[in-house]
Image (cartoon, rainbow, N blue to C red; front, side, top):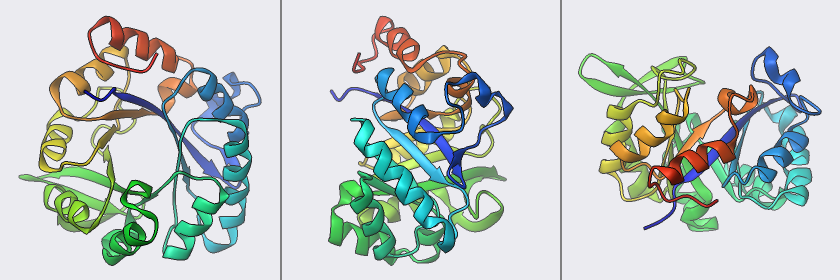
Length: 251
């Protein structure tokens, strides 16, 4: 049985980490490389960088951050935000990213999943899915959660897998930022619909939430941001808690 992964997420804007005002509690706050090093020391299994101002002009900033981070840390790096082409994927992988995460661009052009997987391997292609409950189904949103697509999330992840996605980064828009726990119905449905790993995201607020998402769904990993950034607990605290409750993790 594969060990479950715990993954911190950093939103990067103009070369700085942004996630609320409490970032000042971290050493060298705002410097993504320094923060990534902290999570590396805490034995995070991976780290996700999301370039939230990923227009063409800003791409050089995130490439520089990825280069510097890959020199300092030994955990896999997943980078997302504004990836629109195979050339963008190549640039990030060449800079030191292990995986690339795409949402809006692959909803609008699903062939990009196939092109990326054929060129670089399925393991490099993460499809990020932002989903929200609508009437009787989970709907996919793009443009940072601003635009509904009409796509059913369960059907979309199946399509993404068939096109060559190696992993799904699943964010519950209903749960995101609430600290009320992961969206278990959404995570359960998606993780049962595909045979590739699913990362649960959105809603982590307490240690029990990490246990619940692993005990009650087939999620392979759990991602969180604010609980780690605000030092409510560390990656190590989560892993120790899970281990004591019988969930296999890398300590």
